Image (tube, rainbow, N blue to C red):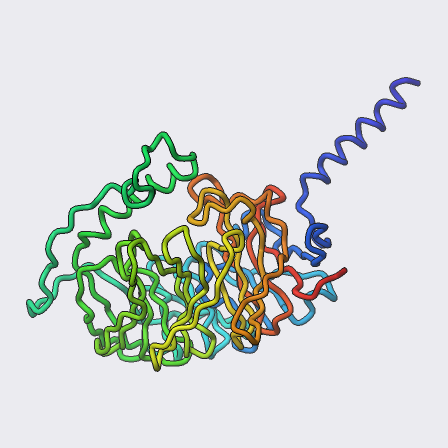
Length: 417
């Protein structure tokens, strides 16, 4: 008799624990009142990097990656029917990027670039390309390479002695006086500074995808990274000078013929930082994270590509985010929050945030998802949420590991309560 009672109880306990470990699929966040839906079925799935386009031109499909390969999900029925992620490109496949005009997903495999069509399911080889940095009309690919200017017109800058980042970031403090989070930040910046202050020569290679003709141009002594073509101007490339943000002027553009190499934001105070730059949908604005100074005052800033004029929206410390993104009409921003180890050292920063642009030029913040159980630190088993706003402005899609495994989620912008 006793065994008959204990066995069902034990089975129920095991089942309840298994259910508790299974990531939720559809719920209303009790802290915010917003509905959250899991889009991915496979643990280990994640969104693309925040500035890489993941949406079809019509906005009906979203692309992410999972253990099986590159996945797509139909957004037209999101919220009314359970989402069903479909495998588009089996592994191995890297560098996923959705074309701005066609319905193709560019990806890399075995040193080649290929393109998969979302509707026909056909895959084609993209001749002459080596990376998925492809321009708006899909005619040119770009990459950054180690190179010295053969003309001799680009002299190497004078050597810059790296200063200890403890001195730069926390003047007058000893390392043992800092919090563990601050110590981690100092160590990270020390590593970046060594390369950023005295970089090797680099240049861009622009390749015509039809003819295979290549041009190497834009020679400079800088650590070139985060190449992003304008979503509307096929001849304009956004890139950054990587490194310690408070010691480099980071945000630049260049045209594919090598002309108009332009610094888009110049730092004007010691320890000012500007970075994690990304395009507006219309290609008129470059948005970025601005801090004046680092860890002090926080902004979402944008520079008009045509005029150079800047806009700035103030953001509170606890609303600062690892990455921001913007709706197609620039009326909404999202931010993916951050933990205590990151530059804002926020005490209550673990949220998926929505920011609404107000008529007076300010932002109104709304918390969408409680991320208090999310691990943000990539070097410690975590993942950056890398969020974006759907083209219809109804959802924010992001990566989360707050239920244990890494998954892709969508949170509804309209509040449920």
